[in-house]
Image (cartoon, rainbow, N blue to C red; front, side, top):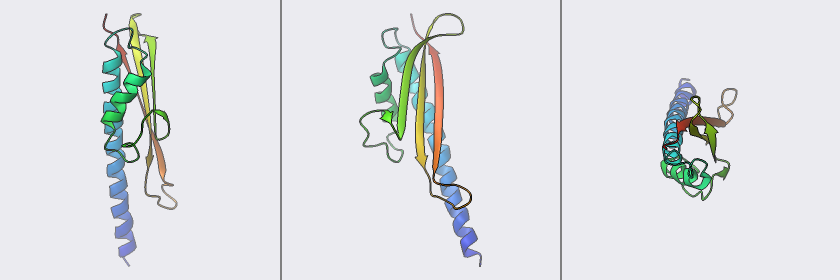
Length: 124
């Protein structure tokens, strides 16, 4: 009688672990891409450079290892040149990852979206 409860608890713990790992990985990848795009004003909106750094950081996540671009699900990366809060040039990198989870009827339906934004001042 306890076997179904133990099974769902086990599945929930595994899903929570994947979710936490994904949160950390997406935050790190956004930070690394922002550091790259903040090197100069010519790189501040480098979509391809940011994508390369993000894919390298997220390579261990499910469904990411074979991706060649960051334009569609499960990974979407945008890098834009913006003006920082102090009026100086800055870069903004947004990373979105669609995490596939084990569906638990009535609780989790199998997909979560993790989005992280990083804004960083561009080096003069």
